[in-house]
Image (cartoon, rainbow, N blue to C red; front, side, top):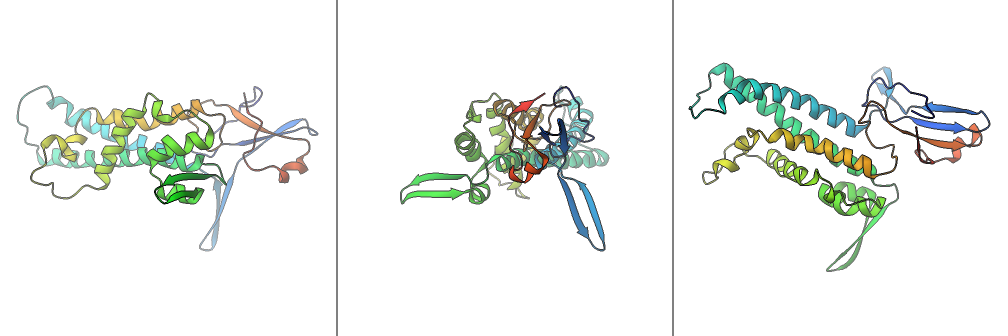
Length: 267
């Protein structure tokens, strides 16, 4: 929304609009980034998606399915001390639950990882001191080789002059999500014989707290959204959001403006 004018967004997974305030035309011009792809003999054109938003949406969808199965299959059995031997149809449901909740976990964590990569400014470099002296990391190296934790706690605060996300309310819960995501990614088909029951991945995935862990990714992204000035790489999280304008004297000046450069958010 800009200066009281609402721009309808059909799908919040879209990349954010760019609004150009053109002085000599005395009007705002909204532009949407478009993808044009040659597939076989055809050409397909569509509005560019925001990658973080797509991972978040996938996580939300899978989490909803997992919650439904959990509420119908697991929750009714938690209040008694009875041994439940699941019937064949219930076994199918619990397998479905494990699949949905694992995908929700992976997609939620990947959304945060994706956003961290997207927020690193082009041309940014990070200097790291080590035993062998200083090592300078460029953007591509940071995106590829630095952990999500290091991007959150060190890279982004340095690059964007923002509050350390480690101080956000959601961060400690997100750290637990990271632990269980790593367990899911590196899980083995047969658990070691000496592993404690409470440490088994299937046991952890059946704990009621698992849904709060998955939700922590969205909560963390919302806190990052609130801590930063307008950034077009952020996914659209709300039904109505501020849109930043890029001010131009004439439309011909567009070529001289870097994509995404703005003069701050307006409503």
